[in-house]
Amino acid sequence: MSSFNHNVIEEFRANAGQVGGPFEGSGLILLTTTGARSGKPHTVPLGFAREGDGDLLVVASAAGADRHPAWYHNLLARPLVEVETGTQTYEAVAVPAQGARRDQLFARVVREEPGYGEYQERTARVIPVVVLQRTHEAASGEGGIAGKLLDVHGWLRAQLALVRELAREEPQGAAAASLGLQLRQHCLAFCHSLEFHHRSEDAGLFPYLEQQHPHMREFFRRIGSEHRVIARLQEELAGALDAPGARFSERVERLSRELEAHLDGEEAQLLPVLRALEA
Image 1: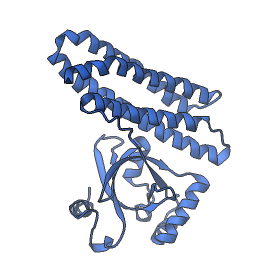
Image 2: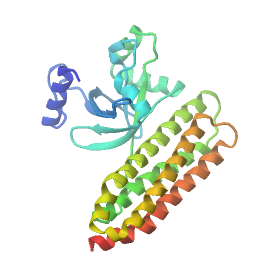
Image 3: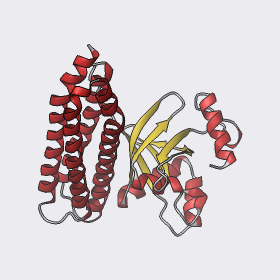
Image 4: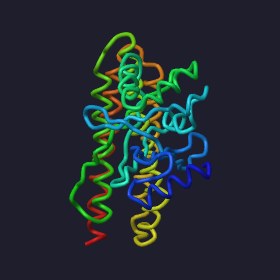
């Protein structure tokens, strides 16, 4: 991170999103992506615009450079990002706009901030416009570890439902390409979140609970083996996106139903145990 960005980020966080200098009076957010190669968090200050439904738009201008900025490559690989507005912090799925929709959104941004148009004139690349689609976690209302598990599963189910809905649509041409990128980003967000969730369980939660309750060793081994099956299903889902072909929506429907069945099964086995341990 450059010292300039570092100073802007510190000032932003210390003053509820307000910064001085060249950004005084400008609307800024902090966008945190996960490094495509490093896997480490990467935070940048960015200007933004609002879409009609309230989602935020950010532009990968890189001041008109001929290469996309690193944060854009990061969100293509790992679409789940964190957004800080100064008054709130939330999670979002980053979806680059495509084709005519990108052009329409870029024109809207340029009307508000003409400098982006000047950046586009400096480079032959098409400067991306990214929609930050806020995720809405389904709160279970239950406390403790059991409640956290239900909250995570609620978010995962919502993403699966969206993936299925997107897969059922069958537009043509550029619209199909745009839909395909939306589907890819939400699918990756789901897969990365599920992978992290299972890794946290296998490496942290389950060993801790097993240490406290050694008689439950076989139970946790069984859940761990199910996670390996789910990892295979995730790979199948990613493969279906890479080569859609015939009966694509049916494949996505089948795989998503199998993944949902895993969530149901894990809750059926794990929640009674967690509730009993916390009673």
